[in-house]
Image (cartoon, rainbow, N blue to C red; front, side, top):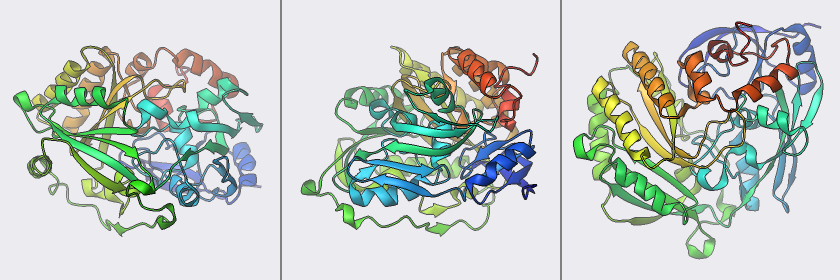
Length: 454
């Protein structure tokens, strides 16, 4: 029986690029095998929160929003099992009142569990807890052949780690079991401090990594000269109720707040308005350490209360461009060079956020031990050119681009950035899916499978 399908114009969260795609929206998981038989080209898509074209496929997409059932929650052991379409917000709403959270929490909780594994997401604590997949006990994945396979770090481990960060090209994740992290309250104790430049910012990360649960740095990227890379460093630790934390029973289920109804005109957020915002934000902090008790959502998900915030950047869309550089003695110098190059180009970023990372596990997972910088650029021809130049510089420095946020990387630079484990990943994917049934616009753009010229 043919499955209902539609033609839809879709994009990732960055609203660029847009593509007309054939879509299927199964009501239940038993519908998926028929879709597999009907289509020769598919990619699964959860909440569409990856930024570029990773979850787009003009030839066929499975939209998994309705495959969102909770299967089991062991409150004593802190293990939850869900279908891939369940969001992290829905998981946290169930687990927090019982004293458990996800060990790896990204900047938004409105991503699907399957998408979190396929992108192998990370949070502000990657240096300590690692990425999302490190805390996954096992997954059930549907292969191109129609076979359903159980995978974990000990069973079919090669497939497990090829799927983690594999951008959906190994198969369709059906079920996922996650080991949770215990907490005693809804609050964290944060300490913030102004930093005078990128060198002092990096030193704060180095000095704080052994006594922090989370670390992040906001950068005023409009500052120049000796102030280049100045910003605000923030570290945080979980606390208990006895130290002023809010009770877990006070957790309120996630509810989406005010919505941005229309795309903003592109001229509202411009270089001058953002420079003024950065100046005022920097001035609002003090030079010495300032300690505060903050609530869970305020720390992890400040933008989630504003629905469709991506529309603030206008109809043309934007890039959340995230790269990582390896931890070396000269990493602060390298970050300075990148920031200087961006300023010299005449382009600007709406936002700049620095994080420190440990080692990764998935074959194509983004983090390496080092520092990542996330930048929000407007979608303009000049920024396209800037990204091409930046990609080359980052590759030459031994860094890489986060595939979940990429839209413009080239095949050659992708191969250079991920060269260490890419051959092994390609071999596994070729064995699992010899005819390339699982595919995406990104996979073709980057020739991820490596067989475009075979």
